Length: 200
Image: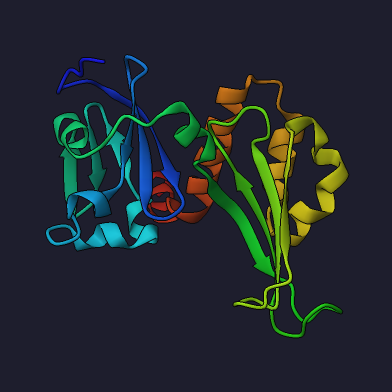
């Protein structure tokens, strides 16, 4: 696909392990992974997920207040167009909590909810990590959106009941639902200061 270097950016989706999926107005997707382009040398903040995810979108650029602004052209030059299978495997943890001590482990019993924003077949992964480290006794299960009612308690234990409520009440198509979930996740965890300033 031929990219316009000044294309409008319509969405940015954070991905676990230091990446962003950038969505352009023509529908093109780019996988922006700073480590692959040696960007940490010049932009050290990109190596910190809490900062990487505290972005705003302004037409044809992504901004990090007081740190940097990357244009569409810069993103295109420092990213790749992901394959379909690669996109399906991209995931984002939206809720996680250590519930220890439990009957299973006194120190480490972590529940987690992860979404795969581009996998409409089984987009939700529910996991447990028990004990941690090499001897971890946990496991994971990928489920369909229609199956979440069976796993409501897992969302509660993952400190992620808000996501269950969004999914359960939604009548939107898959793409819009994922965008809503991720937007709320960012608002709750990385845009608190920006929202406070805006509302003050």
